[in-house]
Length: 407
Image (cartoon, rainbow, N blue to C red; front, side):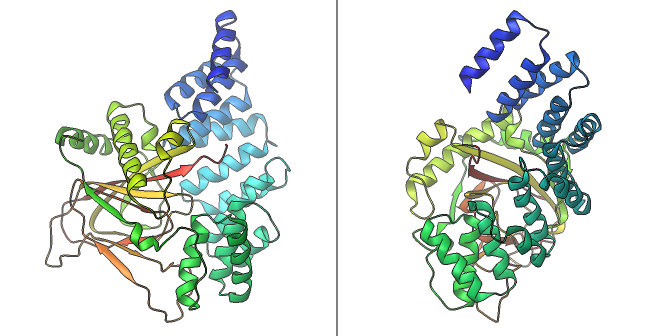
């Protein structure tokens, strides 16, 4: 990729009025997570050629990753105005509508994208995911049945459990286990099913994910009070856009990936989190990569972060991070303690909120975080936060680290 960037830069030096070179350069910068440069190159391309549908589509994708959903929507709609039958633009538009809390519009565009062979595989995953979150499991099963691929097969497994189809679930689970293609969504489904059906399928993670939770206090010399205050100031900015998030009660979640921001405070935050994730991987055995540092340097992993800001009475409903590998939370500010010491705490469990419980008893683990605490845990774990009655906001940075799917 670096070599390709160098070649495009040389091409631009020879001919600075080459819009396609700027478009392609912007795409390469985006792949590397350099969104500032990606935005600059793509805007330059459109300055030279305003009617380029690919550049408008790419611009929409960059804006979405930067958390600017209004601009993402406008750019993607402009791309489709110029090229109405572009399946990738329809797929991207569906994802933007999901983040904006408009699943009905998202399904319309996902279905348009699914008709094209080039995007049908990717779109099937997004369509199935949309059905899963809408509780339309039978529709989701129809989309996923017979499809091959790690992501879509694990979604299929999850929806079989939602429908309480024990025999089909176990057949599918054993196939995924045998072939070594479980992801965190499949692991979570197996952990829940083992308790529900009183069985012992292997989740492949070398242990109980409830034992994967790591908690550490971040000291002032690692990340100063001034830095935390700067983060809080940035998060209160009117430029910080929220995304639709049905799990958050009395609060909001920022859109996009704040760890892609070129702002120095977010760069420092990202460096801190990578360092702590590396320590986690070297210290724990459940769901870890002992070669994490080397693999991070090879850009095998990507880190995505967002802020969750809750007001009095706020809480986060039970969920897990199916697209993650490791998940974490860095607490910037916590509400004052109330009469109930558990207010604002985070609770972990194998009990999936969409799965049948059948009267089974699921073990729970509770952590009562303070400001400056950092938690890291397996993305398969379901977790929720408990409501609080303090007037002081509960503010944290949540993050996922995942293996790049484009490698």
